[in-house]
Image (cartoon, rainbow, N blue to C red):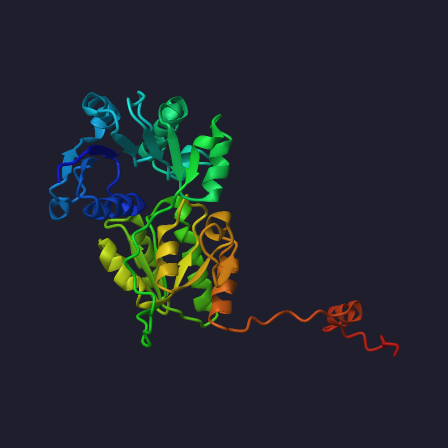
Length: 353
């Protein structure tokens, strides 16, 4: 059947992490719409050879040309076509037809420190935030992934009715998990950005080892992450700490590995939409996570903790493992005085009954 409309999708800055999952899920869904012609703008680092279909036109865009994609799109639009900008950045010009921005980067709408990032990343985020602020009104609709993101965006947008909540993730998971021999107790799938909070998690595992508790933890990290050497150094100095590193996994490999774990632990400070949380929920994997709105927006975890406190993470892990945490007994002031006098040779001091 001849296509009757075109959908233009700008995903030219999505190639890793949650953004990669987003565009891959979008592409996989196209097979259900044979009578629509899709033009998808992608990053050169996104592998697309196995994704090609008759009704998909892939256009590879180099980094410095991303902000000009909207001009190409406008030249090829016809009435009744549709444009979606999947990569957080609005177009610098308005489209001739209905357009949507899919916003999933919390840094663009919330005031938060970026001092822990590299200078290059800080400059990129500053520029993207500026572009969003100036050109956010160039789309007809802004879609976010959670109520928390909507509440943040309401403060930035005059036309609040243009903000819609529409989280999506392809449901390709087995909900009837019957594994008896788990590969790991806990798993954390995340990039190595500072807000993912790996350091507090590692401090917690060090605290657990000091208490002779050694749950297994698998950290799924990007290839060549700076954290890999940090973790290896920690493991070598504390041989009993049970941490394994996995890197350079495909989405499918991550999902299979998640299914072999008892629990997803998620110490992130903030997310617009925590994809691993949704994946764990769909697969009936237990979740222990930060007590944050972004978590409660989409799931109800087994246990929660304060992500600023490694001790809080430690206690949540122990609660999940059903390890009783001994509490200090509340004593009296009289007992305090006895304690003060414990080593004193004041034999003449007597205690009135």
